[in-house]
Figure 1 (cartoon, protein in one colour):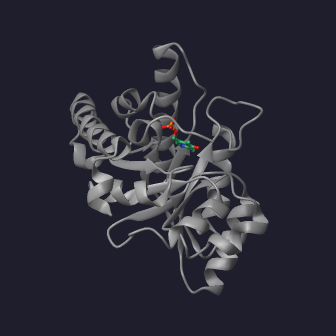
Figure 2: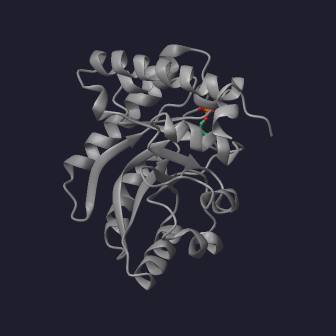
Figure 3: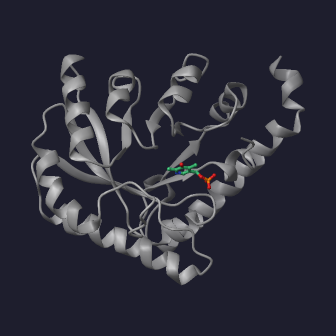
Length: 241
Ligand SMILES: *Cc1c(COP(=O)(O)O)cnc(C)c1O
């Protein structure tokens, strides 16, 4: 079945896309004084069929991201996850936490103390510690979830106290900007916040991951210090909803 599929254009394009992404990542890493191994490449798999996700995994993808709990749970058993990790990257409602804890390696989209407490509670019930990122609304957009930078400074101390979770860094989805320098400013503001929080040296908080950069702007994000880029359409092509 795989052999027949390999001639399918949707498969071939994934291979080509990944090669191009790795090349761009390699060069952008050098610009930022780092090695490409310092930057994790996530394939965002929302709306993508498991057969295509498995193909991407066979091409070396070792981290995938899904936005929705339901979609993630409906696909996960069909995926070849031996060498691949999964992160939740979309807004998580408190009443869905119990379904997802233990099923993903990280929750990147922690946008309130309340949801963090629930993740902690459910993690303890399962005898695990769940790694999380704080989502930052870096563009102060009213229609987006996330802590403001000021709230992040304050709330990180509260999150650090919650048993059952471990804060590992920050995540952001900056506003879509036509202007390159505008995007660069959001990314560099994120980097600043990341360093400032890191410098607080809070127990139970490690600022290891700065998750920013999507298909349209990942090169810039890496240049500005991203350690994890989240790519959907750059890997799989335009999404069909
Ligand atoms: C969909 C999504 C992505 C990937 O978007 P592309 O533009 O297709 O790369 C990254 N992060 C989050 C949070 C998303 O929802």
